[in-house]
Amino acid sequence: MKRWSLRALALLTLAGLLFWALRHAPLPEIWVAVRRLQSWQITALLGMNALSYLLFTLRWWTIVQAENRKISFWPLLRVRVAVFGVSYFTFGPQVGGEALQVLVLRRAYGLTYTHATASVLMDKLLEFLINFLLLALGLAAVLQHGVLLENGMQRTGSLFLLTVLVAWPPCHLILLQQRRHPLTLALRALPWVPQSSRPLRFIRAAENLAGRFCRRHPRRLLAALAFSGLAGAGLLLDYWLLAGFLQLPLSFWEAIAGWWMGWLALLLPLPGGLGAMEASQVFALSQFGFGAASALSVALVMRGRDLLVGGLGLLLAALDTSLK
Image (cartoon, rainbow, N blue to C red):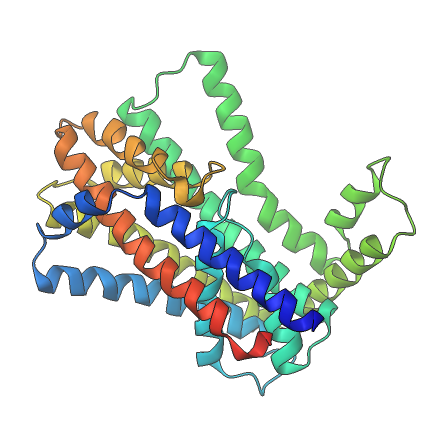
Protein backbone atom coordinates (compact mmCIF):
# COMPACT_ATOMS: atom_id res chain seq x y z
CA MET A 1 0.00 0.00 0.00
CA LYS A 2 2.85 2.35 0.83
CA ARG A 3 4.53 1.59 -2.51
CA TRP A 4 1.36 2.33 -4.47
CA SER A 5 0.78 5.51 -2.49
CA LEU A 6 4.28 6.76 -3.34
CA ARG A 7 3.79 5.91 -7.01
CA ALA A 8 0.45 7.72 -7.07
CA LEU A 9 2.02 10.76 -5.44
CA ALA A 10 4.86 10.74 -7.98
CA LEU A 11 2.42 10.48 -10.90
CA LEU A 12 0.26 13.30 -9.55
CA THR A 13 3.33 15.48 -9.07
CA LEU A 14 4.56 14.86 -12.62
CA ALA A 15 1.09 15.47 -14.06
CA GLY A 16 0.78 18.68 -12.05
CA LEU A 17 4.15 19.98 -13.30
CA LEU A 18 3.20 19.27 -16.90
CA PHE A 19 -0.21 20.92 -16.49
CA TRP A 20 1.32 24.02 -14.90
CA ALA A 21 3.89 24.38 -17.69
CA LEU A 22 1.40 23.88 -20.52
CA ARG A 23 -1.11 26.24 -18.87
CA HIS A 24 1.46 29.04 -18.79
CA ALA A 25 3.16 28.28 -22.11
CA PRO A 26 2.15 30.41 -25.13
CA LEU A 27 0.96 27.43 -27.17
CA PRO A 28 -0.79 29.38 -29.99
CA GLU A 29 2.27 31.58 -30.49
CA ILE A 30 4.53 28.51 -30.48
CA TRP A 31 2.40 26.93 -33.21
CA VAL A 32 2.60 30.07 -35.35
CA ALA A 33 6.40 30.13 -34.99
CA VAL A 34 6.77 26.44 -35.81
CA ARG A 35 4.64 26.87 -38.95
CA ARG A 36 7.33 29.20 -40.33
CA LEU A 37 9.59 26.15 -40.66
CA GLN A 38 9.47 23.60 -43.42
CA SER A 39 9.05 19.93 -42.59
CA TRP A 40 12.65 19.07 -43.43
CA GLN A 41 13.88 21.88 -41.18
CA ILE A 42 11.81 20.59 -38.27
CA THR A 43 13.17 17.11 -38.93
CA ALA A 44 16.75 18.44 -38.96
CA LEU A 45 16.28 20.28 -35.66
CA LEU A 46 14.71 17.28 -33.97
CA GLY A 47 17.50 15.12 -35.36
CA MET A 48 20.15 17.44 -33.89
CA ASN A 49 18.36 17.35 -30.55
CA ALA A 50 18.19 13.56 -30.66
CA LEU A 51 21.90 13.40 -31.46
CA SER A 52 22.66 15.49 -28.38
CA TYR A 53 20.71 13.07 -26.17
CA LEU A 54 22.52 10.13 -27.74
CA LEU A 55 25.87 11.75 -26.91
CA PHE A 56 24.77 12.63 -23.35
CA THR A 57 23.74 9.03 -22.84
CA LEU A 58 26.96 7.69 -24.37
CA ARG A 59 28.90 9.73 -21.82
CA TRP A 60 26.96 8.27 -18.90
CA TRP A 61 26.93 4.75 -20.38
CA THR A 62 30.72 4.83 -20.86
CA ILE A 63 31.13 5.62 -17.17
CA VAL A 64 28.59 3.07 -15.92
CA GLN A 65 29.92 0.22 -18.06
CA ALA A 66 33.33 0.46 -16.41
CA GLU A 67 31.88 -1.37 -13.40
CA ASN A 68 28.99 -3.29 -14.97
CA ARG A 69 29.26 -4.47 -18.58
CA LYS A 70 25.71 -5.88 -18.52
CA ILE A 71 24.09 -2.45 -18.62
CA SER A 72 22.86 -1.75 -22.16
CA PHE A 73 22.73 1.61 -23.86
CA TRP A 74 19.12 2.03 -24.98
CA PRO A 75 17.42 1.79 -21.56
CA LEU A 76 19.78 4.53 -20.34
CA LEU A 77 18.75 6.73 -23.28
CA ARG A 78 15.17 6.43 -22.10
CA VAL A 79 16.24 7.42 -18.60
CA ARG A 80 18.22 10.37 -19.94
CA VAL A 81 15.15 11.80 -21.67
CA ALA A 82 13.15 11.24 -18.46
CA VAL A 83 15.82 13.09 -16.49
CA PHE A 84 15.47 16.09 -18.79
CA GLY A 85 11.70 16.07 -18.35
CA VAL A 86 11.91 16.04 -14.56
CA SER A 87 14.61 18.72 -14.46
CA TYR A 88 12.92 20.93 -17.06
CA PHE A 89 9.53 21.13 -15.36
CA THR A 90 10.72 21.45 -11.74
CA PHE A 91 11.32 24.76 -9.98
CA GLY A 92 15.07 25.15 -10.05
CA PRO A 93 18.14 25.68 -12.25
CA GLN A 94 17.63 22.61 -14.48
CA VAL A 95 18.47 20.03 -11.84
CA GLY A 96 16.41 17.43 -10.03
CA GLY A 97 16.41 14.48 -12.40
CA GLU A 98 19.73 13.11 -11.16
CA ALA A 99 17.97 11.14 -8.43
CA LEU A 100 16.12 9.30 -11.18
CA GLN A 101 19.45 8.17 -12.66
CA VAL A 102 20.52 6.78 -9.29
CA LEU A 103 17.20 5.00 -8.70
CA VAL A 104 17.23 3.30 -12.10
CA LEU A 105 20.77 2.00 -11.66
CA ARG A 106 19.86 0.72 -8.21
CA ARG A 107 16.50 -0.89 -8.94
CA ALA A 108 16.94 -2.06 -12.52
CA TYR A 109 20.59 -3.15 -12.44
CA GLY A 110 21.32 -3.83 -8.79
CA LEU A 111 24.07 -1.25 -8.33
CA THR A 112 24.52 0.03 -4.83
CA TYR A 113 23.40 3.57 -4.16
CA THR A 114 27.06 4.52 -3.65
CA HIS A 115 28.18 3.12 -7.03
CA ALA A 116 25.16 4.65 -8.79
CA THR A 117 25.80 8.05 -7.19
CA ALA A 118 29.48 7.87 -8.16
CA SER A 119 28.56 7.36 -11.83
CA VAL A 120 26.14 10.28 -11.75
CA LEU A 121 28.77 12.44 -10.01
CA MET A 122 31.27 11.70 -12.79
CA ASP A 123 28.60 12.34 -15.42
CA LYS A 124 27.75 15.75 -13.92
CA LEU A 125 31.41 16.75 -13.54
CA LEU A 126 32.03 16.12 -17.24
CA GLU A 127 28.82 17.94 -18.09
CA PHE A 128 29.84 20.93 -15.98
CA LEU A 129 33.30 20.89 -17.56
CA ILE A 130 31.88 21.43 -21.05
CA ASN A 131 29.07 23.73 -19.89
CA PHE A 132 31.48 26.05 -18.11
CA LEU A 133 33.82 26.12 -21.11
CA LEU A 134 30.83 27.10 -23.24
CA LEU A 135 29.95 29.63 -20.56
CA ALA A 136 33.41 31.16 -20.97
CA LEU A 137 32.95 31.37 -24.74
CA GLY A 138 29.49 32.84 -24.26
CA LEU A 139 30.66 35.52 -21.86
CA ALA A 140 33.50 36.42 -24.21
CA ALA A 141 30.99 36.75 -27.06
CA VAL A 142 28.60 38.82 -24.94
CA LEU A 143 31.33 41.20 -23.82
CA GLN A 144 32.74 41.46 -27.34
CA HIS A 145 29.37 42.50 -28.79
CA GLY A 146 28.46 44.73 -25.85
CA VAL A 147 25.26 42.85 -25.03
CA LEU A 148 25.93 43.45 -21.34
CA LEU A 149 27.35 46.85 -20.47
CA GLU A 150 29.68 46.62 -17.50
CA ASN A 151 32.15 48.90 -15.85
CA GLY A 152 35.71 47.77 -15.14
CA MET A 153 35.03 46.53 -11.61
CA GLN A 154 31.98 44.48 -12.64
CA ARG A 155 33.84 42.98 -15.59
CA THR A 156 36.76 41.99 -13.36
CA GLY A 157 34.37 40.32 -10.92
CA SER A 158 32.62 38.49 -13.74
CA LEU A 159 35.89 37.24 -15.17
CA PHE A 160 37.06 36.09 -11.73
CA LEU A 161 33.82 34.18 -11.13
CA LEU A 162 34.04 32.69 -14.61
CA THR A 163 37.63 31.56 -14.01
CA VAL A 164 36.56 29.80 -10.82
CA LEU A 165 33.67 28.07 -12.57
CA VAL A 166 35.77 26.92 -15.53
CA ALA A 167 38.60 25.68 -13.27
CA TRP A 168 36.37 23.79 -10.84
CA PRO A 169 35.48 20.63 -12.85
CA PRO A 170 39.03 19.81 -14.08
CA CYS A 171 40.47 20.57 -10.63
CA HIS A 172 37.85 18.32 -9.04
CA LEU A 173 38.75 15.50 -11.43
CA ILE A 174 42.47 15.90 -10.74
CA LEU A 175 41.90 15.88 -6.98
CA LEU A 176 39.74 12.76 -7.25
CA GLN A 177 42.52 11.06 -9.17
CA GLN A 178 44.92 12.01 -6.36
CA ARG A 179 42.60 10.39 -3.77
CA ARG A 180 41.38 13.77 -2.52
CA HIS A 181 37.69 14.42 -1.90
CA PRO A 182 36.93 18.15 -2.35
CA LEU A 183 33.16 17.85 -1.97
CA THR A 184 33.56 15.96 1.29
CA LEU A 185 36.10 18.48 2.58
CA ALA A 186 33.76 21.35 1.69
CA LEU A 187 30.89 19.74 3.59
CA ARG A 188 33.12 19.02 6.59
CA ALA A 189 34.01 22.71 6.74
CA LEU A 190 30.35 23.55 7.38
CA PRO A 191 29.82 23.84 11.15
CA TRP A 192 26.24 22.56 11.07
CA VAL A 193 27.14 19.27 9.30
CA PRO A 194 27.93 16.46 11.81
CA GLN A 195 31.34 14.97 11.03
CA SER A 196 30.15 11.40 11.56
CA SER A 197 26.83 11.77 9.76
CA ARG A 198 25.75 9.04 7.37
CA PRO A 199 25.19 11.38 4.39
CA LEU A 200 28.74 12.70 4.75
CA ARG A 201 30.18 9.17 4.79
CA PHE A 202 28.03 8.32 1.78
CA ILE A 203 29.30 11.29 -0.23
CA ARG A 204 32.90 10.46 0.68
CA ALA A 205 32.41 6.87 -0.48
CA ALA A 206 30.87 8.08 -3.77
CA GLU A 207 33.77 10.48 -4.35
CA ASN A 208 36.22 7.67 -3.60
CA LEU A 209 34.56 5.46 -6.24
CA ALA A 210 34.57 8.33 -8.73
CA GLY A 211 38.29 8.81 -8.10
CA ARG A 212 38.87 5.09 -8.61
CA PHE A 213 37.17 5.38 -11.99
CA CYS A 214 39.54 8.21 -12.97
CA ARG A 215 42.60 6.14 -11.97
CA ARG A 216 41.55 2.78 -13.40
CA HIS A 217 39.79 3.83 -16.58
CA PRO A 218 41.60 6.82 -18.16
CA ARG A 219 40.53 5.80 -21.68
CA ARG A 220 36.89 5.68 -20.67
CA LEU A 221 37.29 9.04 -18.98
CA LEU A 222 38.69 10.56 -22.19
CA ALA A 223 35.94 8.92 -24.26
CA ALA A 224 33.24 10.27 -21.94
CA LEU A 225 34.85 13.72 -22.11
CA ALA A 226 34.87 13.55 -25.92
CA PHE A 227 31.17 12.62 -25.99
CA SER A 228 30.46 15.53 -23.68
CA GLY A 229 32.36 17.95 -25.92
CA LEU A 230 30.55 16.74 -29.04
CA ALA A 231 27.21 17.12 -27.27
CA GLY A 232 28.07 20.70 -26.30
CA ALA A 233 29.06 21.51 -29.88
CA GLY A 234 25.78 19.97 -31.02
CA LEU A 235 23.80 22.32 -28.79
CA LEU A 236 25.50 25.34 -30.33
CA LEU A 237 25.02 24.00 -33.86
CA ASP A 238 21.35 23.35 -33.13
CA TYR A 239 20.86 26.99 -32.07
CA TRP A 240 22.73 28.32 -35.10
CA LEU A 241 20.67 26.16 -37.48
CA LEU A 242 17.41 27.25 -35.87
CA ALA A 243 18.30 30.93 -36.21
CA GLY A 244 19.29 30.40 -39.85
CA PHE A 245 16.07 28.56 -40.66
CA LEU A 246 14.14 31.54 -39.27
CA GLN A 247 16.07 33.98 -41.48
CA LEU A 248 18.37 35.25 -38.72
CA PRO A 249 21.89 34.79 -40.14
CA LEU A 250 24.15 34.88 -37.09
CA SER A 251 27.93 34.94 -37.02
CA PHE A 252 29.84 32.45 -34.90
CA TRP A 253 30.17 34.81 -31.94
CA GLU A 254 26.61 36.09 -32.26
CA ALA A 255 25.27 32.52 -32.17
CA ILE A 256 27.30 31.77 -29.04
CA ALA A 257 26.10 34.98 -27.35
CA GLY A 258 22.45 34.26 -28.17
CA TRP A 259 22.69 30.67 -26.99
CA TRP A 260 24.47 31.80 -23.81
CA MET A 261 21.70 34.24 -22.91
CA GLY A 262 19.11 31.48 -23.33
CA TRP A 263 21.20 29.11 -21.22
CA LEU A 264 21.38 31.65 -18.41
CA ALA A 265 17.59 32.07 -18.51
CA LEU A 266 17.16 28.33 -17.91
CA LEU A 267 19.13 28.65 -14.66
CA LEU A 268 16.44 30.82 -13.10
CA PRO A 269 14.17 29.10 -10.52
CA LEU A 270 11.32 28.70 -13.00
CA PRO A 271 10.16 25.56 -14.82
CA GLY A 272 12.08 25.71 -18.09
CA GLY A 273 12.89 29.39 -17.51
CA LEU A 274 9.30 30.14 -18.54
CA GLY A 275 9.11 33.74 -19.75
CA ALA A 276 12.75 34.47 -18.97
CA MET A 277 14.06 32.48 -21.94
CA GLU A 278 11.80 34.35 -24.36
CA ALA A 279 12.90 37.68 -22.90
CA SER A 280 16.58 36.70 -23.14
CA GLN A 281 16.33 35.99 -26.86
CA VAL A 282 14.50 39.22 -27.64
CA PHE A 283 17.08 41.17 -25.64
CA ALA A 284 20.16 39.44 -27.08
CA LEU A 285 19.16 39.20 -30.74
CA SER A 286 17.87 42.76 -30.81
CA GLN A 287 21.44 43.83 -30.01
CA PHE A 288 22.49 42.29 -33.32
CA GLY A 289 19.93 44.27 -35.32
CA PHE A 290 17.12 41.73 -35.55
CA GLY A 291 13.51 42.63 -34.82
CA ALA A 292 11.74 41.54 -31.65
CA ALA A 293 9.26 39.39 -33.60
CA SER A 294 12.03 37.41 -35.30
CA ALA A 295 13.92 36.98 -32.03
CA LEU A 296 10.77 35.84 -30.27
CA SER A 297 10.14 33.23 -32.96
CA VAL A 298 13.51 31.62 -32.12
CA ALA A 299 12.55 31.41 -28.45
CA LEU A 300 9.09 30.05 -29.22
CA VAL A 301 10.41 27.24 -31.44
CA MET A 302 12.94 26.36 -28.73
CA ARG A 303 10.13 26.38 -26.18
CA GLY A 304 7.97 24.12 -28.33
CA ARG A 305 10.81 21.63 -28.82
CA ASP A 306 11.64 21.54 -25.12
CA LEU A 307 7.99 21.11 -24.14
CA LEU A 308 7.71 18.19 -26.57
CA VAL A 309 10.86 16.45 -25.32
CA GLY A 310 10.18 17.35 -21.68
CA GLY A 311 6.62 16.03 -21.88
CA LEU A 312 7.92 12.80 -23.38
CA GLY A 313 10.46 12.65 -20.54
CA LEU A 314 7.75 13.03 -17.89
CA LEU A 315 5.76 10.26 -19.57
CA LEU A 316 8.79 7.97 -19.55
CA ALA A 317 9.48 8.83 -15.92
CA ALA A 318 5.89 7.94 -15.00
CA LEU A 319 5.80 4.69 -16.99
CA ASP A 320 9.32 3.44 -16.26
CA THR A 321 8.80 -0.08 -14.97
CA SER A 322 12.14 -0.01 -13.19
CA LEU A 323 10.72 2.45 -10.66
CA LYS A 324 7.81 0.28 -9.62
